[in-house]
Amino acid sequence: MEAALKTRRFRIKKGDLVQVISGRAKGKTGKILAVVPDRQQVFVEKLNLIKRHTRPNQKNRQGGIIEKEAPLHISKVMLVCSNCEKPVRVGIQQLEDGNKLRICRQCKEVIEKK
Image (cartoon, rainbow, N blue to C red; front, top):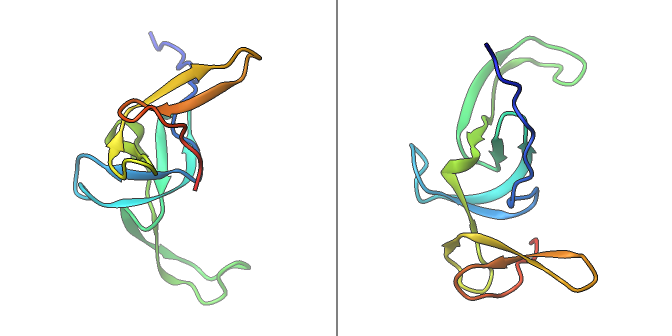
């Protein structure tokens, strides 16, 4: 029996700077292009590149071999803190007015998108 995957909210968002912590691209950093919550995957700019053979179409008139980013599992990336400049775990801090902030677990600074 298949259990329905629950969509989760992740602490990594589009536009964040992340570092890959395992796999072929270990140690490389890049910006998040997209997050796919149902499949727990992220697309990172210029990382995990694959080649696709495509036919000519409206978007790509010439066709040929195109290099594009493939998704990475979200557990393979860690957010890079702008203050520490290291990959860190992310915490959530709730303010009195009900808003939530993402904070660095090491230096306790608020994490802003770059």
